[in-house]
Amino acid sequence: MISPRKTIEYDRYEFQKWEHHDAETIVETPVSLTVNGTVWLSFMCTPLNLEAMSVGFLFNEGIIQRMDEVADVRVCEHGDNVDVWLHHTAEQPTNWRRTSGCTGGVTAVDLLAKPNLSLIGNSFQVRPDAIMNLVEKLFESQELYRDTGGVHTSALSDGEKVLVAADDIGRHNTLDKIAGLCLMNNIWPENRILITTGRISSEMLQKAAQLNVPILISRTSPSSLSIEMAERYGITLIGYARKHRFNVYSNGQRVGL
Image 1 (cartoon, rainbow, N blue to C red):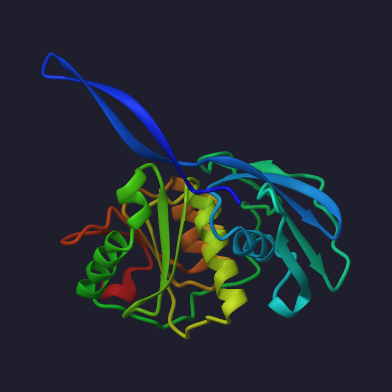
Image 2: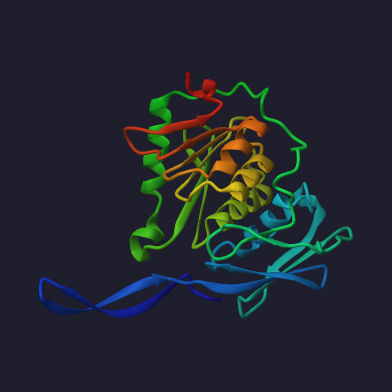
């Protein structure tokens, strides 16, 4: 298996002198996804929770809806391919589109189409102090980031505690891993909040909607398209969340606006 960390050396110039350092950096590597014996695509990712990422990707793309559709999922001995065998046939999309996701995400979902699901009627509410508390818990869970830097973390919460967390160099991969971990461990809380360190772009919003998450929180900014999509899907979109502040961009009724 491939390690998510790699030992490196570097030289730092500071205050008019050089210093040599040993450190660790995050690993980025291609991992192919094979479905029913056919290679579909390659992820650029951090080699953690690869089974969950593959299953979650198929869920977020609408290929599967339940874990009982999966006959087997396994990472090859070299760690550079994940084999997923389904109980049914699955047609490989012919029109993969490059997304704005870091490390080059892809999707076959039409992000501009009218959504086939809506969270507008979801009445879940959360207090502002609970949002800031969850952001703090997300930061506390970033062990890999503290060791290596350069990695995104996303977490699923029920509004009180973090239930599932995932790390990856690609922010979109973290939400695929969250989906896969939920499917594989049957974790589906009634109330769902997603917290992420990554920017909220259109594909991040789509994956959150696929997970039926009414509240999506990021420590950084949303894109213009993600705000429009959040309004259409009925998702409360929160950005620039810190321990003491946050911005609400859509459906603020869930946090008291």
